Length: 176
Length: 216
Image (cartoon, rainbow over all chains, first blue to last red):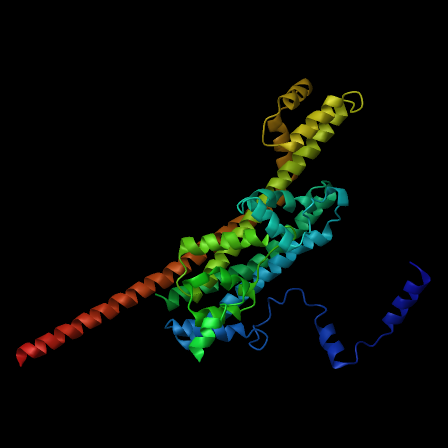
């Protein structure tokens, strides 16, 4: 570690934390992993009331409609957390540029054009080829990344099980 | 005035609601376009937007989306199915990667790569298409007294932990799809029962009117 980095770390240890309101708000999110244990805030998630309106239009009582819409939002939050876990694979694995496919990280427009040229139905065929790239180089490192990813997905299961079973129960009760 | 505006409208601007086409009325489509996660395409680098849209469109057509709540459940099912598809690709990559590494270790330990270029050629041919049996590879393995099945077993044993976790995830997502389908069914059955009740009530009312007329 160079001299400057050491000095920065020593100075940072003397810090008494953020002073401004924005800084405090930002720092309050430092320890946030996925936030799935938090209650749904209707100000942050205005879609709860939109969904509630849809269920109420479907003849469901207001309290049941609210519970249903909250369960849908919880399920969506778990999906977003799962997506983050997938994206982390791409950050965890260092890919040799020679091993990257020509379409790796290509903009969506280019992929759409290629798909169109291939007749629009061959996306499935080249998806595995492209997708395998991050974990293709082999070796222990990739196994570790895969294991870390799968463990992360497994830890998210309990939130999803809770959301889906809650949703199932509510649907059964509301539409019996 | 409102009708003029609606004629000029190019429909909902949100990406996923575009795929639902004319199945939804304007109000429902507009409402859905305000739900951020509903309008998000969950894509990874290298995955194609048009592929996502095509598969969603196919599902929308096969399930027959009647309203906004159906659309939300169908989008859930679609995203779960894509998750299943990704996990299957990952499972395939575990096997292929493991096989490639095991074959390479085995052959390079017994044959000198420089003196025996056919080993390199055989491995390259196998990597080209691992699904198809490769006679030249089988011949080399015969010389070593090893079968492909033995290699597969060793790969499976090495990746057992990963595969077990992966299978759990697959089962989880497949269950989610079944649950979402049940939710769609529950709504549709409920709608049918409501229609039937409304029909019965109307029939009773008509019968009552006829009876009243007869009495008079």
